[in-house]
Length: 308
Image 1 (cartoon, rainbow, N blue to C red):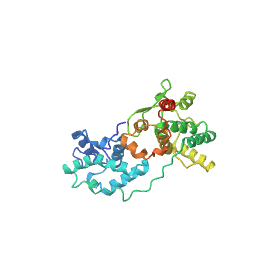
Image 2: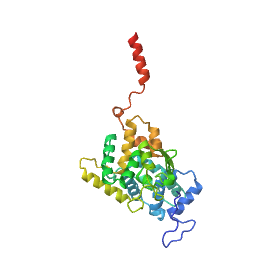
Image 3: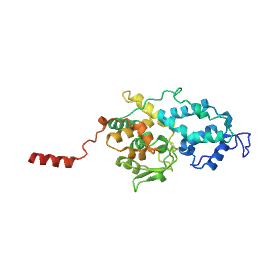
Image 4: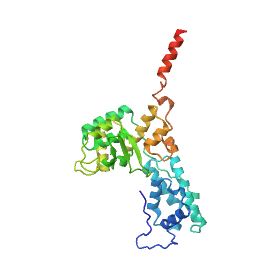
């Protein structure tokens, strides 16, 4: 998806030498097509949406910090993730200084850790806890919310990647789900587990969207969240998980079963392996369940020892 620059704010027509961020971004990218500012498309789009209609001279360090902290809170970024965003913007702001649009780079005085709000604690569900939650949810909302949450739990995908899934992107023949509305703007394909294949194969195709509400419209975020809250109210012993916790739980259980970090990166659609490591590299060796890697060779070796 290509982001459209906001070149013409309300009641303002911009000239080619305009000091507005939107126009200066276009000029910067024309001169430096390899600029890192577009490396993470969701960050670039957010930056454009928040600042393209503003004059370069109006942008302050505090304002940039508040924007970054807002991103952290919204997307559950770690402090390390947040710090990695700063270099993506730095090339652009250096361009503004060198071409005389700014007297100094506001990123130089940017401190990210002083006003970072506390983020919601990550909730991890074990394999059995996920299964139990799905069983309870099936009793609560068998035809609307349950199929959506089931797909979410079996793919590790983000909420809107699954919520906006179209039947045209479901390949039952090859058992693949093609995700085209992703956070980083890049398509990826996921293999269906056997239970997920059975669920989608048995589902009725009514409209282009896979997951519909009882009125035949695309299921809404509010309806999903309300169903989860209602489920947990009826089951007070259940952990207070949300949709994104199912993504974390998928990653956690994948690694516990012996999955590899690079495999997990591909499944989750992270731009870099470092992001996957930052989020899930804390898994302890004692948590890994797949430890018997060589059952055949080990038993053969033991038999040879016994023969001696």
